[in-house]
Structures are given as C-alpha cells and as structure tokens.
Image 1 (cartoon, rainbow, N blue to C red):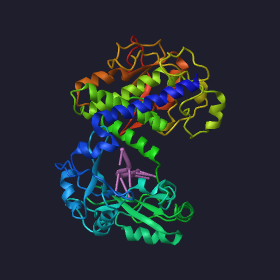
Image 2 (image 1 turned 60 degrees about the vertical axis):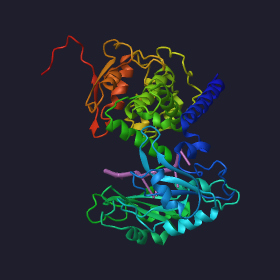
Image 3 (image 1 turned 180 degrees about the vertical axis):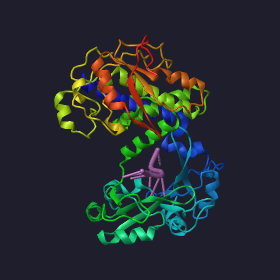
Image 4 (image 1 turned 120 degrees about the horizontal axis):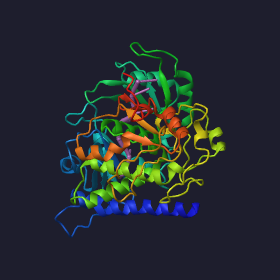
Amino acid sequence: MYIKMATLANGQADNASLSTNGLGSSPGSAGHMNGLSHSPGNPSTIPMKDHDAIKLFIGQIPRNLDEKDLKPLFEEFGKIYELTVLKDRFTGMHKGCAFLTYCERESALKAQSALHEQKTLPGMNRPIQVKPADSESRGGSSCLRQPPSQDRKLFVGMLNKQQSEDDVRRLFEAFGNIEECTILRGPDGNSKGCAFVKYSSHAEAQAAINALHGSQTMPGASSSLVVKFADTDKERTMRRMQQMAGQMGMFNPMAIPFGAYGAYAQALMQQQAALMASVAQGGYLNPMAAFAAAQMQMAALNMNGLAAAPMTPTSCSTSGITAPAVPSFPSPIGNGFGIPPQAGQPAAEAVFANGIHPYPAAAYPAAYGQISQAFPQPPPMIPQQQREGPEGCNLFIYHLPQEFGDAELMQMFLPFGFVSFDNPASAQTAIQAMNGFQIGMKRLKVQLKRPKDANRPY
DNA sequence: TGCAATT
C-alpha cells in the first residue's frame, strides 16, 4: 500500500510539470514562448548552439527590464540562443535575474569578461553579474566538478551596517579561499547587517565558524557576530512561504509547516497553481488566488491524509525537543490519500504530552488528532458550512492578520478561524503548540473557544 | 535576529 501511494505521488508530480509545460514554460520552448531569440522572422535559420555552450546566469537586472530590453545589451557579444528572465512561478514577478545562452561558447566568455561586475544597470546599486549558471558546474563530465555550494556558504549576521565586502573579506580570509562575498542590501543599497561568504571547501567554512562565531560584537550590533552555514534551499522555501503567508494575511495552521515536506509540497503547489490558472480566463490567475489555491490544496490533503498519520512513541522520543516532529513523506505509517482518517488516532497526543513547545514553524506537529471540521475534497474549492466539535474541542484564534484585500478570499479562509478537534486532549495539544506561533509581525493567541452560554468575564 | 537571485 505504501509503495503504491508513493508511485501515485510521483505520478502527480509528473503531471504537474506536464500541465505547467502545457501552459507554455517547457524548458525547450521557453525561448520561443517568450519571443526573444532564435532569429525571429528568419525561418531558414534553425537556432543551433555549440555543444559546449555555456548557460550564463545574469544577476542584478532591474525588474522593469524584460527579455526584449535585455537582448540588445547582450547581442553585441554574439548570437543569442536563449534568454529567459526568471519569474516567480505563482506571481509572475520578475526576480531580477535571467539565464542566457549564446549559440557560441566564445560569445559567453566574451560577455562574461566584458560585463561581469563591470557595469551597473540603471536603478541597481550593484554591478551586473554574468557568470556560468549553477547548473553548468554540476554533473557535466567535461566540467570541473565543484563541491555543492550549500556546504561551504556561510551566512554572517550581526555585522555593522557600515562594513563593506572588503571588510568582511578581511575578517574571513584567514580561514580559506573566499570565492564570493556579498553584503545583503535593501533596495536603497543600505546594508542589512549580514552577508554571504562562500569558501572553496566545507572545511574552510567550518574553520571560520569555529573561529568567528560569537567571537566579537561589532559596533552598533545588538549581539555578537553570527557565523553559520547559510540556509538550504528547503529552509529558504519555508522562510518565503511563511513571509508570504504573513504578508497576505492568511492563516492556515496545516499548510504553513508543509514547507517541511519540501519537493513534494512544491510539486503539489505547482500542480495546483497550474490547474487553477488553466481553468481561469486563459491567462494568469490573479496571484492571490493562485497562492490560495495551493494553500487550499495542501490543507485538504493534510486533512485527508497526513494529519491523521499516527506517530509512534518511538518517533517521538527520537525527535528530540527542538527537532521537527513531523514525519518525512511519504510516511510508511500514513494512511495514504483520499482515505478519510478514522477517529481516535493512536499516540497523536503522546507526541507533545510532555510539554514540548515546538518551534519553529517546521515543528508544527502533523498529528494532533483528527480535525473534525469538514473540508471538501480538493476539486470543489468552496468550504462547507462550518461545523463545530464537542465542547472543549474548539479553539478560538486571535490576532489573525486582516490584510485581506479580496472578499472572496476572506470567505474562503473564514473557516480557519475556528479549529475543532475530536477530543479535548488534542485541542489542548494544539494550544500548547500554536499559541504564540508567529505569522508575519503577529503572534497568534490560541485558546479554547468559550462556550456560547458562558458569561463574559469582562 | 538580518538568509540574494539559479528555471
């Protein structure tokens, strides 16, 4: 059964990319769809590129420039095979960077030496970046294989905001060869007081951590220097999801920690967004709705399957205090998808019976016990009428963000205001876990919903 | 207390 569910999951992921491609972002055809290269208007010229062509990553591009604006800039170094501005997959927002492949390898080398760090596009506070894309250094037999950069890239926090790249380099150069050093800056060019430092090896990075973390306090910093490995992709994804949830004023206690499921959750989100976009008016669905769709899909999935996955006492005891007590997916102990969970999931309450306060968001326990609120199967997206659980099982949640700009969305998410469990112990567990949970700038206040007939205490 | 921008 478990094997079968895993296969199904993969099938869904595949379908997701297929339908996305159907909407016009197949890697092979992106250039055509964007109408930006391949000598348009000359059908006799079939675009060809060298076998050893280099895909370049272009960074520090003003967000108001699209492919057609960038094309002239790069064309002077050779014929462009493909140029793609990176956009956010849900909002379509320009990410400020692009991929560029020339037909000839030589053109790429020329462009890189002429442009990289050499010139600053209007409105930018840092010079343009032109270098081989990360994908170019991985896996190619003819390329020098580089170690993955996430094990050797450091995040440095608690810097003085006046410190420059050079200052940071000087601080870190004793511990190894620094390949990249970047101060993080806001849109105004001011330092955010933190930086990335990339060494050539993991050992060098580790040495820098050992020597520098907490070693000193920079003038004006609120605590001592922070030196740690930078976030992984997964952590970044989660961070962004949480930020977005905060910004958009959405609260979905089930969906947020789903970031922890990484690739699978992402595949689902893509699939759902693509699906929604295709049934909408042909073009891009409004971004709010697209994101909401993804959230809804995840919530529905969670309620149907993963939320009900029982956690064994063993998995609890090994999860430790701070480690997320969420099962990896697919879980061999889960009951799969589309099968309504039975009431009274074993051991769910035991997970946090010892008062563990699971932070951060990733640690939100996926197995409180069954949430009794009815939620429709994925396709119909309109929640049923709200249903309450027995007394002592219903939570009331204060401080939900209220930035909804869209009345429909408001209606969609209204049911999340109340959360009902099928037994009081689970409700208490949820309070323990979620009270104080931070969303954006706010912290949730979670307590038992007062019985209707209770006297108001004040 | 701050994690860019790599489809």
